[in-house]
Amino acid sequence: MKRVWMMIPLILLSGCWKQDITKLEVKMINAKGESLGTVTLQEVSSGVKVKVKLNGLPPGEHAIQIYDKGQCKIPDFKTAGEHFNPDEKEHGLLHPKGSHAGDLPNLIVKDDGSVKAELMAGNLTLKEGIKKSLFTKDGTAIVVHEGKDDGMTQPDGDSGKRIGCGEISKDKKKK
Ligand code: ZN
Image (cartoon, rainbow, N blue to C red; front, side, top):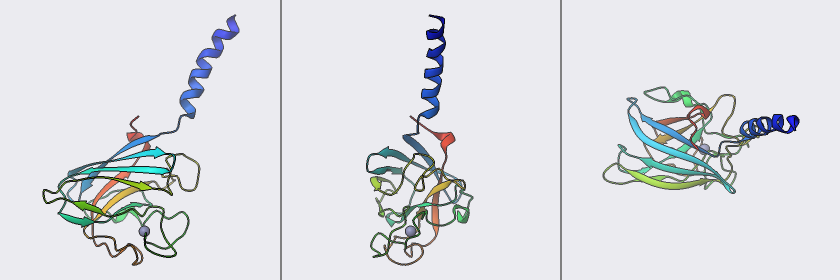
């Protein structure tokens, strides 16, 4: 009987340790470090769902991509590195040798500066320890650009300056 009681906390503990993150809220900032809203990443069977809820952006079409360094230092966000590309492909959703795992469809920002969108990243995961995982040694980040991604031009779709950034970090996890 004693032995059964000892087993229960063990089972509970191991259950917690093995649980992968399935949802993560990323806080986005602009070049001044002000909040732009959030991007929520959610693990689904076909990849990672990217739920965008931003405001304070210039109206029009903007590139949004996942980058391969988890650092968003204002004002230019160069610290975020380059597009997350674990499969060593070419840039662009329209490129025949593409695309980077971090490439996403453009955002359309409304006249009031807001955008709500749901994008799918089929070559990414929130599970740890595999190549396409967003939790790498260097970390990863989400970047919004001044211009749109043409889906073809190397290395970033001719999308211009980086105007928004958010670090993808496990510490900020949300169930
Ligand atoms: Zn790319």
